[in-house]
Image (cartoon, rainbow, N blue to C red; front, side, top):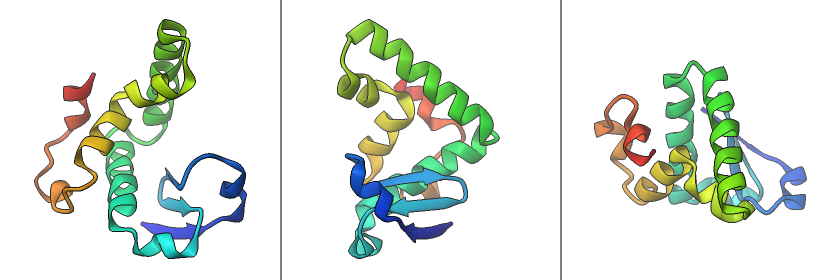
Length: 108
């Protein structure tokens, strides 16, 4: 995992994004935000489990499925199984130690 601070994220409504093997964050002080970093680390694990490319394909497909069903970008984003797992477990800083393989499936 490599954490990088990127000013271009200022134009987006996100504080961080995981693009294997990097975690891009908006502000340098977010390197100390353990919850945000844990959320993104969960995504890195998901990406590895799905051999990286399949994560992105499935993520986009799932997003558009929910977008066309809900007609709302924010709600569609929050319904993606990968995001649901990451948000549900981001406060558990030990989660990745005990997480089972493909745990995101519980959130489908």
